[in-house]
Amino acid sequence: MKRPSLYTVLFVLVMAVLCLPMVQHVGGLFHIKSLEGYTAPLEPVKLSVKSYRDGSYQAYAQRYLQQHFGFRNVYIRSYNQLMYSCFRQSTNQNIVIGKDGELYLRQYTDVYTGKTLRKTYGMEEDARAAMRQHVEETCRIIDSLRRFGTDVIVLLAPSKPLIYPEFLPDSIQQAHCPFSIQEEYAKLYAQAGVEHINFVPVFRRLKQAFPYPVYTRFGTHWAYSTIPFVADTILQKIAAVKHYPMPQVVNVDSNFSYRYKGSDRELEGQLNLLFPLPHDRLPMPTYNLQEDSAFRKPNLLVVGDSYFTQLNNTGFIKAFNRVDYWKYNQEAISSVSERNGTVPYVNRYEIITRADVILLIFTDMHAYDYFFGFLKTVEKTLEEGPDHDSQTAIRGIAEVIKASPEWYENVCKQAEEKHISVEQCLWDNARWVYEHQYR
Image (cartoon, rainbow, N blue to C red; front, top):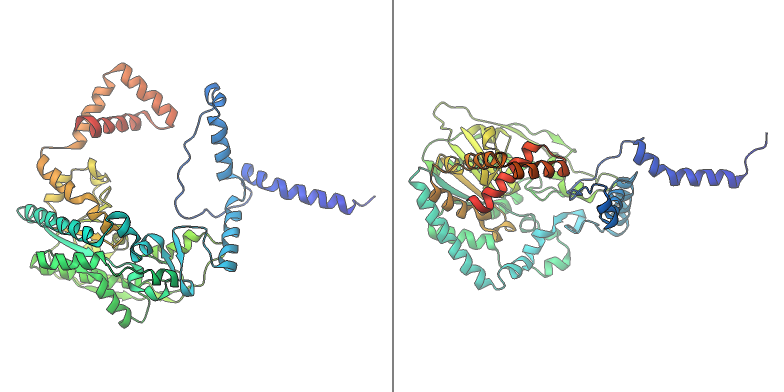
C-alpha cells in the first residue's frame, strides 16, 4: 500500500485545523470556559424578505458568528495572555496594570488624577458649591425621615488608589489631584451633624496595622479579610446612633487560602487570561454575631454601590429584622419576594418609612453621582404618600390594555418578535405607560 506523501498529510492537517472551529461551533466537542465581564446582548433579527433586502439580517448574522465561532474564547484568552505576559498590557481598557502586577479600575484612577472632577464640575470651587447644596438637601431629608423614627448614616467607602497609591503607574502618580471629594464631604458632614463613617483614614491606619492586604492585588473592593472589621464598625455605629445595643462580630475561622473568591479576584477575571495569576495566601474569614437577648434587630435599608455585596448574604444581616438593598438606587434586592425588582416599582413608602436605619454607601467614583438620586426618590415618595402603589397602578393599566383588542394584539405581536411571553410583554407595556404617561 502506497504511503501518503508529506504534502497530503500536511494538507489534511491544515484542513482539519481550519475546519475545527466550525466543528466546535456546530457540535460543541469541547467545553470552553466562558469569558468574564459584561457583554452587551445581541438583539436577534428574524429572517424575512424585508430584513434580507435591507441587510439587517446579514449584519446580525455576521455579528453573531463573530461572537460565537468555535474556540473564540480560547483565541481571545491566548491573545490577552500574550499581551499581558510579554508587554504587561491589558486589552480591557477599564483595567490599569500598576507596579508589581497590582490591578486598578480605571474609573477610580480617573478620580485620583482629577479627570472625573474636571469632567463633572470643571473647577474645585464649583464642586464645593454643589457639595454644600447636596449636604443641605441631605439634612432636609434626614429631618423629614426622623418623624418616622428613621435615622440616616452615610458610609464613605475607600477606593483602592487612595489606600495603595504607591503601586499606581508613575504617570498616574505624577498626575495626582489633591482634591478628595470624600474628604470634603466628610468635613461638610461633620459641620452639619450628619452621622457618617469615613473609612478612608480608617483603612489607611488598618493597612499599617493589619498583616495582610486590605485590598487584594487583583480586586477593586475591600478584601474579604477586612469584612468582619467593616461589619463590626457599622454595627457599633448603628448602636451609637439608635442608642440601643447591637451585636458584636466574633471571628470563627480565618480560613487561609490561595483561592480567592468573588471580588478578591474580579479584575483578574476581567483580564480573561489563559492561565491564572499567582495568588498570595490570605485569610477568608467566617464570623458570627454575639448572641444576647438584649440586642435589638432594626429594619435596615441600604442604598449604595457594589461595596455592600460583600456584606449582604453574610452573618452581618442576621443583626437586622429585615434588610432591603437598593443597588445604585435602581435594583431592589430583598428577602421579601414582593420587594424585589426595580426601585420605581416596589412599595417605596413602606420600605423607607419603616426602616429604622438607612445606610447610604458610596466611594469617591460614585460621589459624583450623589446617592444615585436617592434624595429625590425619598422626596417624591413622601409627597406621594402611603396610598400610592405603583404595582396596583401597573396592574390596572395592564387590564386596560387587555380590554383593548387592537392594543392587546400589538402586545402579542411584540411578544412574538421579542421571544418573550405575552404576560411579560403586557407587563412591560403597562409599566412603560405608567412611567411615561400615567404617573
